[in-house]
Length: 438
Image (cartoon, rainbow, N blue to C red; front, side):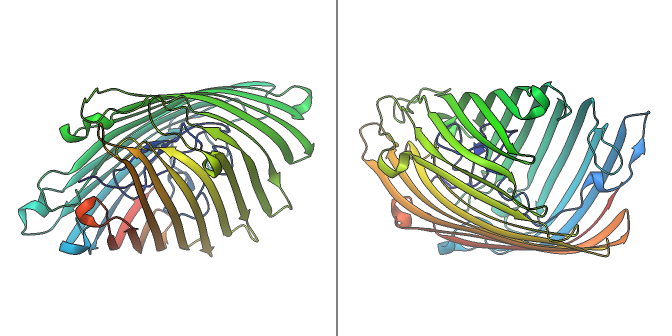
């Protein structure tokens, strides 16, 4: 039985990301996604203690090392994402992390060459007597690197890479978890002559997703994208831009029973981004995208329309509010060929006296899966409603020591019955946590 997922990674000014959702149905956003309209959720995700918010250890005139470790304990209301057979369990999580950077101690970037090397780990243990549940313990490391020039240079470049291993329980009570390895890399060249009023960014991105599960190897996929972003600052902090991108999506495994189509997605959008006022910023874009899938169904009609709007408001230095909407299609390696997506998010983060950090976030997405999964099989016509929400409260007892609580909700409702592959679940996770950061 397949699973769903929701995850978006947006890289630089123009990039493509991996697009998981709340589960393992993962896609490559080398398709119709509007990649430049704000980092969705950037102000909506409940804030977590940042490594750069502390002074760190100065290793040289430039290099600063930040490190931290957190421990969480709590309760998972639906380990296997299955409403028909709910299995609950206490959980324990350990999360060490570090960052080596030449950013200053307030988090400001170097005016010359800026770099950041970082790594983190989320280890999760299920404290249950059920052997199937205990087998879902997960080891999820993330390693990333960023090297780029300052934004004020006439000619600049940027290199980035991030690897993440994701291990999650299946939809049925089984010993085998679903594990996938994701890697996203990009190289960017930027030129901004004449004081930066005109700017161009050329970027190449590569996304790779590999499943460690034999049954899902047919969904191993690689995506390439070459994109060009041209902008003109018609106001000091506001720019008009156009963006075009050509991608290639290819599957690494050839499964005769589940042939996956090669795609050559193309995207062209135009929009505006920047400050509306000193406290309000906006990004708005609209355009056209096509999948160019070989020997399969292709998005048509309204599916070729891409549009997005993101608004961020910071009424004070301690408050951030964000909201947005996005319409696009995404590649779908596991189920069908692609899916149409309409999503909206809203979030708030608030700091009080530099001691108390509070965050709320919520996201809704409506997905329409299309295209065949099996050779000679019918086109998938499945519609899912996904909701994710979270709340977090952290109190810094000292600058380097915090304690807090968090709540996360995951919900999916499908119009296809579970017996035909649909997925319905409500999952709640409540955690208390302590940690140190420096």
